[in-house]
Length: 383
Image 1 (cartoon, rainbow, N blue to C red):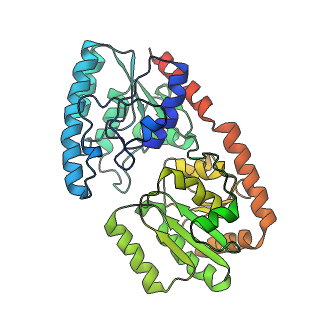
Image 2: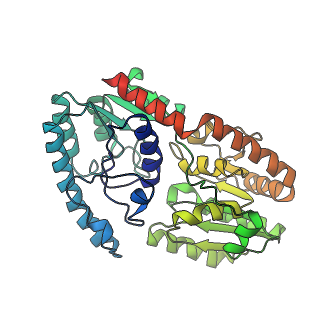
């Protein structure tokens, strides 16, 4: 259940595998507002509950769209609650509770469903909302300890944090990894992909790709890139993805005021069919995050057989081994980040070795088939 369609791509890959194992599974979600036919065109039926209108109206004003989607969400939430009380499922798997920072309505409704004997599974994508410190720790702790019968998190680090910081019982937590996304087997090689996005074939491309948010460390990347581009000329940094316009403008100002060279920004929604092209055009992928619980973007990058440089934050430590399947650097260490970038820029054989190890790991340890099997097993054991 992802009634506001917060993570459409993750939802699709997960529900596709679960439905292949259990035909009785239903997917509760509205349409994705940036690609309203995404689920249907990929063979997945989504059921919003009552309304699925706002996403399809093409409303460009974010505030207006958010207000209308809130009303739609409340209507769908109440509809689903009534429907599930009447026709009881064994398990409800919640991806996001969207009102927790404003109201406890969702908690009350889920407790009502629990009284009906329905088991609640909750995926902990983020232990607490990004950039909020402990402001909402109390209400999220209530969900983790009193509402959810089982929690799914994506890394061992997240499990340890739930136990140590939230005091969740160990037995409630199941670690099931995130999987890679968007490797659609589009037959573009590196040169063709570079041409497709307007990059010279002889340039070494460093790519940051994904939703652009403050916790992802773009400023750290830009500070480092100034030094790299001063020392290496035949390179190009691409930053591609959408985000809050105020934050994007602050990044534009940094780039302009610093006089950064050899950089291309595409601050907008990137259609699904273009995602493999960007990744195939890249020679190096970077994930300079300040912090994160887990990252689907990282696993997606690994699946494209590209070398990676990432920060050595806890959310990456389950996945990455320095100098084996990635180069890892301490967040804020510009000199070390620069050295890692130049090393990979100058050494194609090192790039190849790092990329191959990452590709092997993601295909053996993080397959969606295994993720689907483990998730369904979690459902069965909760009943």
